[in-house]
Amino acid sequence: MARFKKSDRRAILLVFAAVVIAWGSVLIDRHLRPQQAMLTSLEALSADSIVLDSIYNRVSLTPAHQQAQGRYDAIPSPAHETFPFDPNTADSTTLLRLGLASWQVRSIYKYRAKGGRYHSAEDFQRVPGMTPEVWNRLATVIQIGEAFRFYHDLRPEKRDSTPRHTGANDSTRYPRQEKFTEIVVLDLNTADTAELKKIPGIGSVRARQIARYRDQLGGFVSLQQLAEIPDLPAGIEKWFSITNVLPPPLHINKLPAAQLARHPYLTYAQAQAIVEYRRNYGDIKNLDELRLLNLFTEAEEKRLLPYIVY
Image 1 (tube, rainbow, N blue to C red):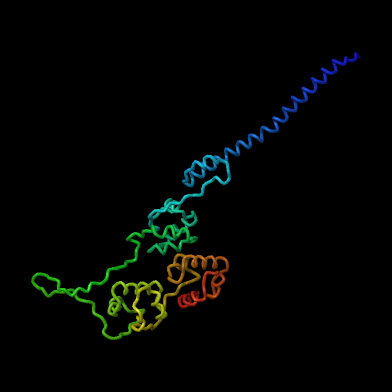
Image 2: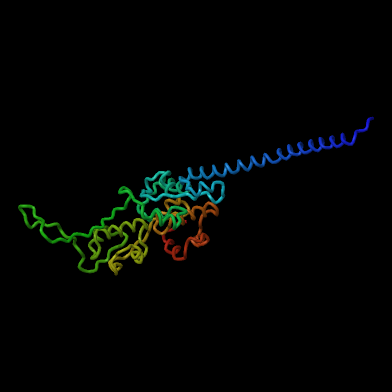
């Protein structure tokens, strides 16, 4: 076998080195290309996520966000709208635009489907999960429709003593409300509005307030409960007594949360907690069990006690 010359061996080594370098570059290129492609796709996905988030949350991208696409802290937070609405008629789209969570919207729909109504702005505060931040923003824009309001005649009673002329008879006047001239004790649970208006200081509005609150409670069990009605004259208790106290039972183990929450002594959150407690532990046998929920004080339990049936 012929031996290679020194110059030939050198040429062979150079060719071999060139082959090795070429093959190495191919391997390196194959290794790095998938990583570069993955990084490119991740950057594109990050940029797309900002655009999609802006669409679904109705948030427009600011120039700063457009320049910072791909950064994890560049995604804007949802912007909620604030505008007048009626919680009795607002649809799900409206409620979501106002910043309520989807599960809160479902709760509102269920409450309305069962006959629940929001008669005042304060009633809407009982929506489950309502936070002070959301409530402070929405409280001033809630507009209860006329059909859903309790009737409040806030106009002062007219006591004009001037005659109403009818042409032929100049002495015709509207009769003034007859008032008691001395203490007459009425049964607080049976007196109608006509009797209530005979008490000095009680007009049509306050008589309706007393009758309405009595209906909401299911009957008064104490004269001190009159203090829970705003703007009643001081010392009004002396005109009343309470006999035959038999308030309609509040079936704490049977009623759904929407009906329990209609009682003035229960908020919607407390009513839901009662229903959840029944689901987890069975029927409530004693009102003291409610203290485990950390939603009831001892005073709240005490005033509920006369109305509860197990």
